[in-house]
Figure 1 (cartoon, one colour):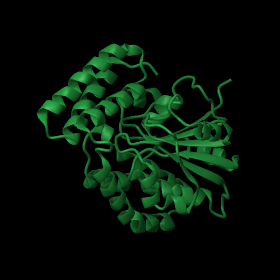
Figure 2 (cartoon, helix red, strand yellow):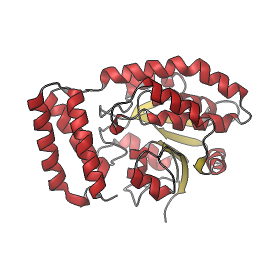
Figure 3 (cartoon, rainbow, N blue to C red):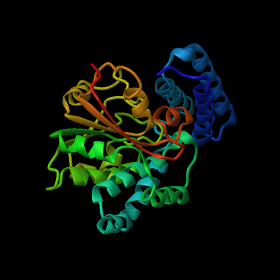
Figure 4 (cartoon, one colour):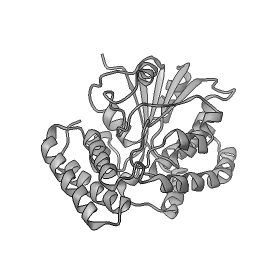
Amino acid sequence: MATSLDCMLCILRQSLEAARFATPDVELQTKILERTMRATLDSGLDSDPPLLGTIVHRIVRDVARDADPYYKEKRRFNKMALGQLPKVRRWIEDAEDKFETIVRLAIAGNSIDFALGMIDEKLIDESIRKAIDQPFVGSIDDFRAAVDASRTILYLTDNAGEIVYDRLLLELLVSEEFKKDATVAVRGEPILNDALLEDAAEAGIDEIVPVIGNGGDGLGVLFDLTSPEFNELFANADLVIAKGLANYETLGVGPTKIEPKKIAFLFKAKCPFIAGRVGARLGDLVVKVQRRRE
């Protein structure tokens, strides 16, 4: 997906926010922003936004000399989400359609995204509560049918904290009701507040299904960075479930180096450009199923 002028401005904003988050040193913040501006100009409008975002966060980590600037925040939001599990499990038990309610909660967790700036627990709690009644953009029935028709599922996570809500959907997928053979893939190396193996362990995901790192530090799925193990699982899974905007940007908007058999995108519409592309309003819950492009 080519970068737009709005994407470039968003990347610069994200760079400044990440710089301020990573270090209090104004000189280092300035250096990060200068290097980001050069990288943005060098890339031009031909670079995919997730690739440019990946470069930006490498700059942040390099200049701030911090391999994982969001480490403490990831711990905080994992703890917050785990604390909410008893409450949301009661909502699920009381729901008429447990599958739909769990999908809603999994998508609502996508609000925990530091690419949009700093967030707080109150906003996340509000997002989770609203998700129970929000309309979907896309078809929950199409997603349910895609799950029913699949034996093997590769589940691509997005953010820490959010991964706790993914656990609810994964528990259902491997339950006696669905009996799916599921594997979870997290990021291979730190970037933003994206989930890593440590976050999957904190969420209890590794007690439910196998978990792998995808081999890279890219936003979304950048196949030049991902491992052969991940690539093979991606190509052979009956269904890939991909959480978050970056996964949609890298896998759902045009051809990719490896085409999945079938892929379902679950995310909140947080970017005006992507929202417009899928016919959503900002904040909507999006469910989009795509089959292999011939």
